[in-house]
Amino acid sequence: MTILKRFLKYVSISTTSNSKSETTPSTKEQFEFAKLLYTELSELGLDRIYFDREHCYLYGYLKGNSITSTSIGFIAHMDTSEDAKGDNIKPRIIENYDGKDIKLNNDKTLEVKSNPDLLKHIGKTLITTDGNTLLGGDDKAGIVEIMTMLEHFKNTNDPHGDIYVAFTPDEELGKGTKYFNFYQFKPDFAYTVDGEYLGEFSYENFNAATVNIRIKGNDIHPGYAKDKMINALLLANAITNSLPNETPSNTELREGFYHLMKLNGNVSNAEIKYIIRDHDKEKFEMRKQFIKEVVDNLNLLYNNCISINIKDTYYNMYEKIKDRNEIIENTKDTIKSLGIEPIIKPIRGGTDGANLSHMGLPCPNLGTGAHNFHSVYEYAVLEDMIKTSEILINIAKSYVKENTKAEKIYQKS
Image (tube, rainbow, N blue to C red; front, side, top):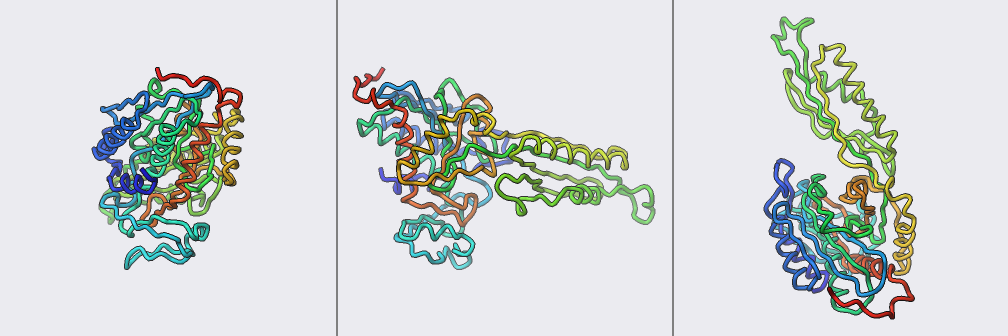
């Protein structure tokens, strides 16, 4: 199956996750997609497939055909973000892109001015949305590329070691590794295929925490409120004004931030939700401590009417990968061998690989060739997706030692 045909097939299936759900997966549509992938893995004739039908994790294993001591894993997630509509997706295919603005519909245009990277894709085939939904390249592009890699090895005699694959649910909710099964997935290291640019290789990401604050005010008649009223909304405003202006819109690269996600309520009660991000672990801890001190100081003035809960969600994978120089250098060399300059960049977010790295499995991230995730302006570049699948193939081949390639091929167990 061609990459284009497979991609269009996958994005036609709605798999939007739901942050309000208490189940895993958060939506039943993810099960339907997993069943399709299970069928395709079966048709490819993998040596082992395991479908966790309770929590919707899908695992596959392809036995190596050459002598190597290294086994590799590849991971992508099945869900798409709820930040934009994810059903009834109607992709548009633009061949031989001319470098101009792309009109998606009467109201929305994918503008070169706002998306200068479009100029890097002149002459290529772009797959866009119709302006009403996201596309689903995050992370169905990654799944397509992993499936293409598996299909390649099943249809050729190219040498490779043991290959593990995993497709996870609810990564967009930060729950992609909640029920991850290391008995079914046990390579020496792995990659998430969940980035944007062709040749992108990331082994750093944010440390992350979620902050939930509840304020219980004292609402009485405003005519008789002197020294009695505690206005929860004003206290919420005091908290937000006490934090530095280090927001997502004011930061880049490895700079951390406080991001206000929610603020609602009335005089009696108010709720605030922040996320805190920083690549540097010490600065990350300082950010958490600072917001806690802001709340503590207000509690001294207002009779402990504010509660705060800070929960870490994931950590920087760099702490677990920085000493695995062989992974870093081999990945860069493999990308270069295909005539692609590696794009080494820190992730201003997180992946399943961040949690997996801290669970003992080094797991950096690779780009997919899809862009503008979580929005109706999302697009994918067909040629870059094809090249990414070649990167995966060549990474798997790179660990087969030259002096063993001609040795006897292992028979399937």
